[in-house]
Length: 504
View 1 (cartoon, rainbow, N blue to C red):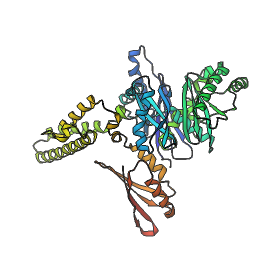
View 2 (cartoon, rainbow, N blue to C red):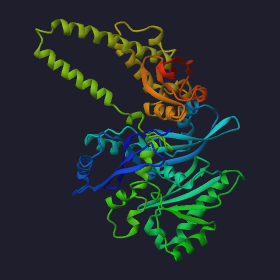
View 3 (cartoon, rainbow, N blue to C red):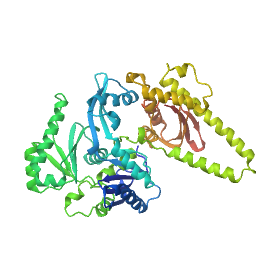
View 4 (cartoon, helix red, strand yellow):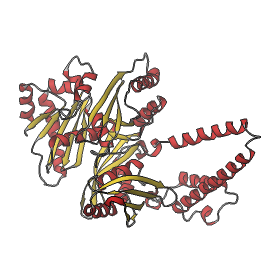
């Protein structure tokens, strides 16, 4: 199920800031706004501030009320590899992918933010497409957005957005299919098998280079296709190639296909998208058609993916995870302290009660820290003999940090499952897929925290027969450890409601 929302997707293309505001929930996404601006600065030391001001200028022109912001990252900064993980199940695979990818890198895994998409289960394990993005590049872009007052909900990669629009243009079908998405500063070769993205590579072949030397571009694409097919161990080959982002002349097409040795078709990914003219008129204002090559398609596709209509890789995690809740807590604490100073005499009783509540909250935080410490390092001396006066879990936290810094044992001793709990966006996407509107209408979602987080799902039953299918699909979801039996109630007028509790 696609979530109906207004989502704004950012992209940094060099010094250019591009933003597309898209309405989702329908058969195809609808482009509401398309804004673009280029940062102007004299020297490299001024670039960051110039980009911040450019983002502020772009956001200031947004007319859509309170859209959800996401970021589209360039695949030029990605590391991609097909891995065979010796596990099944989303949680176990997610915990292992980072460790499975590390041996193939020529640099530290800490330089990457890693996510994956499943391809297929094979020989008792799971084949996945692991994608690592350069942390430094994403951190800089997030820093620019946050300095400009925008804190994106998630970060996806441009090939996911392009693939989403491409699959919508292809329609249903199976087998291996390839696409070359040409952009102004490079190109992306991607391959899907059915609905799964099974391969992609960024090529240093721009739209101008494809026009100038279509035969050289075709040879590079052909070499990548042959390398990919060789890894499939004799399975089916790619029969055709879809080219997007360039409008080749007939002679250019002839040269391209002659060296490619497989048929090619040429598609405009925005041709079936409502509001495409808004994007085309927004810019860039090209001196040649090359500058328009897939300029808006990635951000439009990423916005659609964020609403459950496509592939979503999440790179807003680890050091890049959102810290808005902490900033809000700090702001609230400062405000409370100032108010207490002004009204100290009149609100002594209130302050005392508030103090007690906060002390209780701190102690609850301490209990959570000690529980995490025990689960991560069950044999640690500080776990067996807890320190005295461990107020708020501070001493346990310090001991855990010290152990983490000195830890050099095998990776499997660390309970990585603690760090693979689903995000709110993961949960919303899963519910959108497992609980379609033709069967149920969701009226309430409550997320209860603690050591065993619990999600309460309430709604109306639209199709009693289909409700059982929804329940079974929810029980088989890899995001939930347990799903309770529904509590159903019959309302006046023949209406039926339900409430389900799911634990992670």
